Amino acid sequence: MSRSARIVSGAEGVVECAALLQAGGIAGVPTETVYGLAADAFQPLAVASIFEAKGRPLTDPLIVHLPDAGWIERVAIFESDIEGDLVNRLANAFWPGPLTLLLKKHPDIPELVTAGSDRIAVRVAAHPLFQEVLRKVGSPLAAPSANRFGRISPVTALDVQSELGEVILLILDGGASQHGLESTILSLTPQGMEILRPGPITEDQLKEFGHIIQGESIVKTPGSLPGHYAPRKHLSILKSDIMELSNAGSHGLLAFRQPAGDIAARFGVVKVLSSSGDLKEAAANFYSHLRAIDESGVEGIYSEALPEQGIGVAIMDRLRRAEYGSRHGSGHCS
Image (cartoon, rainbow, N blue to C red; front, top):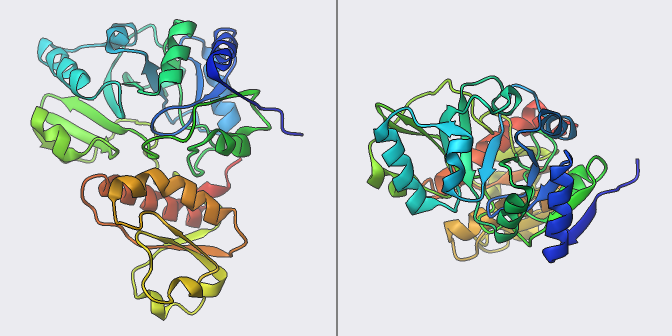
């Protein structure tokens, strides 16, 4: 099938995208984290089209996006006044922005959106074009990342076209994603707050709002499977000295900083996440650089480990899932 997805932009693109979503279609949309594949959360057939286009299991729930916190009561129910107060404080601090809250689902939300769970993942995205689309549609939008299930998340409209151009009709171009990593997912419990997926909003930022508990939650959350975000080529996180590699020439290197000496020359291709060692810059470049190596002519990929502090925790979470997925076939989903 020839590629059919059109890339649109600006005010006219917003109008066209909103009209398609209102009519029960799906579209690629920009957010400040990664690009999403959106559908009206209250139209089950449209939501089903997301799963079909991505090849996503129906057991993997979706994040629902709102234009502002005032819409929360359309999709979720507060279980106590204390929870409602905490949500308001978190919303005032981090919304619009890359924080997703796991709350009790409103009964009107289709079961397909939450994969049968009584919890719903909700956030207010910061991208101005996506906010305009939400307001024009007039309904909350379900929107997981706009990629084939398990593959590298898209951070540009062209990434979406590469991933889904043959199965969707429209992509709204909003430039490169600001953060380059998916949102932090936070569960609110009577015992405290649990980070279910690390992201741009870090533990240090969140602990000002309450106790952070460490646990192994069994709640279904988006993007929680071990093999997400995977390249098609075999990825290995380096655990030994780069100079010990005998097959560097046939591999690409995803480096944190600029490699010292002539190390870079030993690899088929090298992508540097941040020459200055800035973790936020590394996060913003992570998926685009990983995709560039994956689409090059190398046989496999090596990656340096990054410091697990601040947003580095989220980068290493994605990197470990990418390594697992590349070894167990998640990067080959269609």
